[in-house]
Amino acid sequence: MKRLLCVMAVTVCVFAMTAPGALASVPYPDNCVVVWQDIEQDAIILCPDCDGSYLDITVRDQFNVPMPGVLVQVTFSNVTELVLLQPCEGTTDIGGHVNISPCASLDLHPDSLLVPTSGVTVTCLGVTLVVNPSPPVDGPSQFGVQQDPCGPGRPIFSPDFNNDQCVEGLDFSYFALDWLSCDPCSRSNFDRLCPGPDCVCVEALDFAIFAVHWVHGPGSPPCP
Ligand SMILES: [Ca+2]
Ligand SMILES: [Ca+2]
Image 1 (cartoon, rainbow, N blue to C red):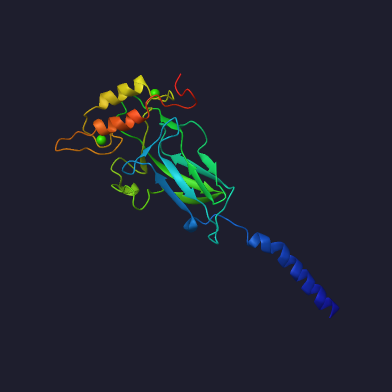
Image 2: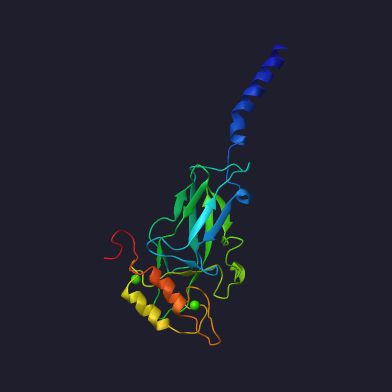
């Protein structure tokens, strides 16, 4: 009997030691929400001032409980022209929520007239939450990420074409070179639209988006 009690006591101790680990919270992708916000027709627009498209992320565990204080990281792939100006990551708040706004420029050759595309992966505590996050359900959906005519992944636009981390005159010269051109995948076709009966893809609405970011750059004042 004494021996049986001893075995039971050891069993209880082992269970008590292992149970917390077994019940530890881990991010559970099916319970997480990751969507792009402030995008144009599924295309990502990134600015060196970090005020372009952003990822709206909520992390929940296997019990559907929000996970506060966990680091979420975003990585881009297959886009050598993208220059991230700081780590693309953030820590969730008490509700398990974080917005991550990539701060980035492009480093395009003047002759590279087409927008680059990229895959995007969001991870938390070593768990992949999602690959190629989508816009909100009621958001833009002109192109699916798999069948985007501009390439695999999502188009990555930036009004800072030349990676001097300032949206200024040289960028305007890139835009002016593309003005009234006819290619839906033009690096300057920020809204992805080619309105009207004629093929004009880079026009006033694209300039309006470009102008929003004029003289934007990191820091304050943003541009030297
Ligand atoms: Ca620039
Ligand atoms: Ca356009």
